[in-house]
Image (cartoon, rainbow, N blue to C red; front, side, top):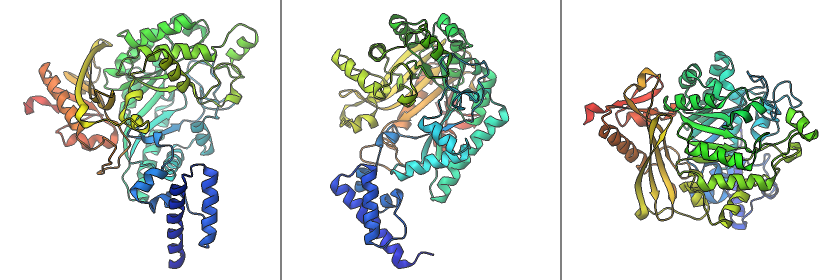
Length: 523
């Protein structure tokens, strides 16, 4: 048991550490650790204070100053990536894939095992419970709220694993979130769950299983929309599989992201630009999210052998910048470019783009050309605030745009500062083509409802965050009005497991994995 005097000294030390850091603008981890040691000695402490304890002793203003890596939760949720254990891909192996249990890295498929999430996973023996617990602890240590967790399930084709493994994996993730919060007297809610998989493993059976486990989003390894290129890389699926998976996922109310790879064998700058044109404007595609991974050459892959023999010319930095800048120039406002470039350490990249700041280089090129990117990430309120751009209430308007996608009609509803082009909140409403789920018959689908700005804990408000200010409720009302105007009487929401109570407040009731409201009763 810690003596009262020592506990008081610990508290005083934490407060002094925080004040010195804030007064002197100390940001380097090494300098902070040295300061903690120095002040711990002054107060004769037996243990060096944890970062989370230092933050607890601060005022709210000081906490904001000390918070590290604010971008982590600037989009309104705390992303927690969890990786499955190494397992063979069901179709074999793509020529550029460095991972797999039998690879030189003995890593999850498509990873080298040295990426941050892969390192955390390996350190925890790929135990999902421990991975979530460690990641939440890391967020806590650097001062972030973590009550709203967006769970990202990575590591290859999860939907090809056994149903029992999938169920166990998700269950342990959710248990870790609950128990981590219980210990701290805080409720952690799962606001979203992303499955990474292949288009040919995202058919009705796999979609139903994902929905049963709590999925709200699926990321498809599309890679390209040219069948010849897909055959060149031994991908094992065709463009038609991507089209089908995209439609079925959207008609099941899921959000859809595409992973694409410029610079694949058989492609070119012209072909890759054409790929982005098709993906963004061909109604068979039009994803909600994009991750762009320029092709990298890693030792131990068939692509590496081709490169060594002179049979493959890798994409260079200049080519990647040109292609991605073009994609950003033409991107619609309803798409979010999540990632540009893999986080594989450069020492493992034999050829290809090694720069880790590729996004910055692309943005610089775009500005030189006189253009700006209007993707969601470049306009969202939280990230804009970190760059000194603050949305004004007086300039905030409701906007509605519609477009055709996958045989249905999509409405992109939003609240935006129209003067500064800052996105505050969005809702994706779909009039589906042919849902296979009985719960969704004769219903419109709310596939996404998101209020941007820094994550705010449940029941709290922050001066420069737009959460908990009624934007979600207003967008719901707009979606219901559009639904009734088009003579639909039912509306279904794709809700994260921990957000279902929110929709209950507006008259929605659970039907299977969805929250559904019969609008004919409330005309």
